[in-house]
Image 1 (cartoon, rainbow, N blue to C red):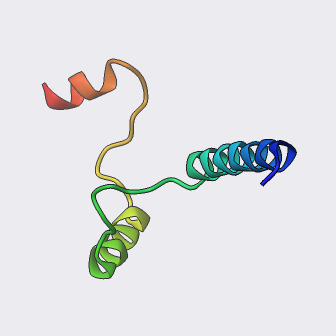
Image 2 (tube, rainbow, N blue to C red):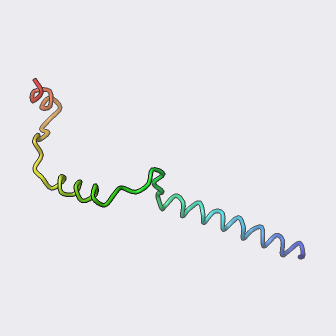
Image 3 (spheres, rainbow, N blue to C red):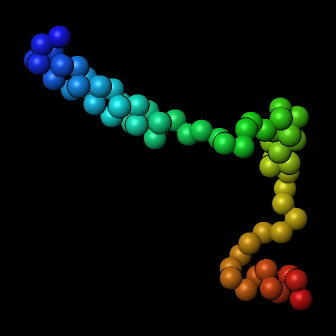
Length: 66
């Protein structure tokens, strides 16, 4: 290989590394794994239910607990 070809190869390798870093930052990776489908379905169902408490200000939770 000529010097010019080696320089071009090095430039391409740097560009590939930059693109890999961009993709890695865009696509999050969950290091703990995926949730089970049954758990996801249960959480969706629970999230649609009416909550037992409605937040209405910084003192409302303390009044409810007292």
